[in-house]
Image 1 (cartoon, rainbow, N blue to C red):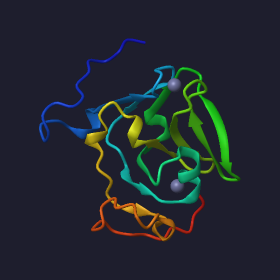
Image 2 (image 1 turned 30 degrees about the vertical axis):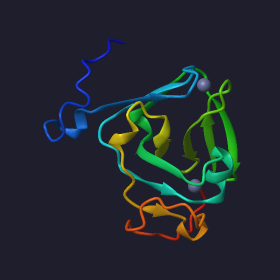
Image 3 (image 1 turned 135 degrees about the vertical axis):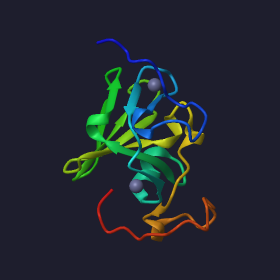
Image 4 (image 1 turned 90 degrees about the horizontal axis):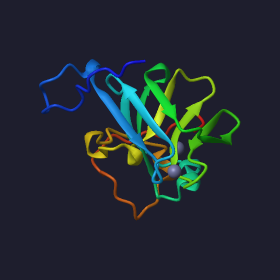
Amino acid sequence: MTKPADTAHPPEGSVDPAATLHTGGCHCGRVRFTARGAPLSTGWCHCTICRRTTGAPALAWVTFPREAVEISGTPATYRSSPVGERVLCPVCGAQIAYRGDASPTIDLNAGVFDHPERYPPAAHGFYADHVAWFDAGPDLPKVDDTDSP
Ligand SMILES: [Zn+2]
Ligand SMILES: [Zn+2]
């Protein structure tokens, strides 16, 4: 497969978002990903599963349609709940993504993108579970999700 010209990330506002290419990967470089097109959404997740599986007080994510994302490097998976799994690097342990079994989307962890600054979170999920000392944008909309992470 020939790699299309990388038209990603020209100056803001000058590109069709559908033509955007997003890239990222784990700390050691074994697991890499590309995502094409515009993200469906971004946000913080404050659920206990995201916290325990990342070790961070909250997880920032960027959601794409599953078919828009290609992951390379033979990642490991971990079933973090009865309804979904985490994708992670088996070498350095970095978490790359969450996939809900029934969901047509995939949540890529914002922190493993090559340019995480391009995906500012737009909302808080599972805010009822947030760590009180963690200030991640107090003015964003706050949702107390009922679906399982
Ligand atoms: Zn790694
Ligand atoms: Zn979560």
